[in-house]
Length: 351
Ligand code: PMP
Image (cartoon, rainbow, N blue to C red; front, side, top):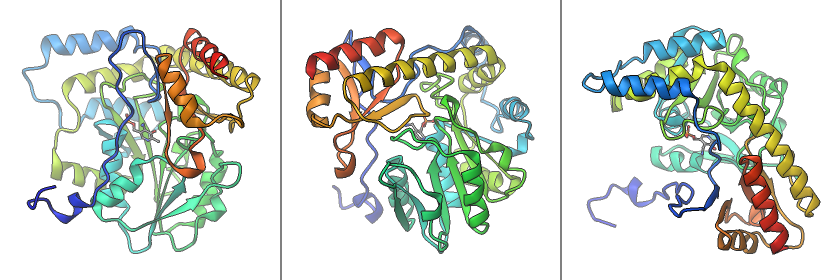
């Protein structure tokens, strides 16, 4: 700590992303990356940009990218915001849209970045406990909410709410901005994007890091009514008016053009998730049904910390959380079938 630090920095608990292993042969199932690389169309677009574009500044409005994504969803480009990963889009959202008189509400348990941003931006928040089955209950969000944010599917549980439940939440809180973080929606959720036309208080956040396999390119999105998007643009322009570099704009656009690759990749992940769930159930694990590219599982007779350490000793990394209620759960990213089999074999040996 330094006496030059501002009080807010002194009190921050920064978010720590998952371990980044460098060892050869390590199986990395801790940060929900896609086991399949991006498709050839994306690689060709990035290569062309490397060869021709790096001398030039990127388009600060990312207009072609926003138009491509808007067309994919049947929206206007003015309804689409882009940023460096959905973490940055969320940061702009917390700063520009979630600071209100009433408290910000989000589930307990949920994405661990939310309280970090509240600390960074001085936002008052209250958490809403999950029910006994680790599900979010829409009715538990109190009427005094100034704003609400929740992932759907939720992280790290993988549980999903139908679009109809999101609409009930919107109808119950017409005065509050409601942010649905759809990082994992392509693996089994129903996007809330079609509700934007009827609900000016809805912001939907998505990422290209998961189903589109571009975590390394850092591209996140927000969709909403024009005034909400304008708030994000104001915040962005006050920090850094170039939202995405040229490689990210070119690669992301190509990812939305290659629908066949996207459909194939997510279908494979969903099929391997089933293989992982069936294998874990056979070993005695319990888990809520997952609509994401990970499962959240615990074994009734073995501690989570022991299991994670034993997997680590076998060169497999999964994610575990130190919160008391979920300390025995492992969050395991869905890999290829071969990776799923390697994990299951290791667990069989440990149990
Ligand atoms: N939201 C949720 C719920 C997540 O789990 C993640 C990934 N850790 C993100 C947002 C951020 O993803 P990215 O910044 O790669 O878009």
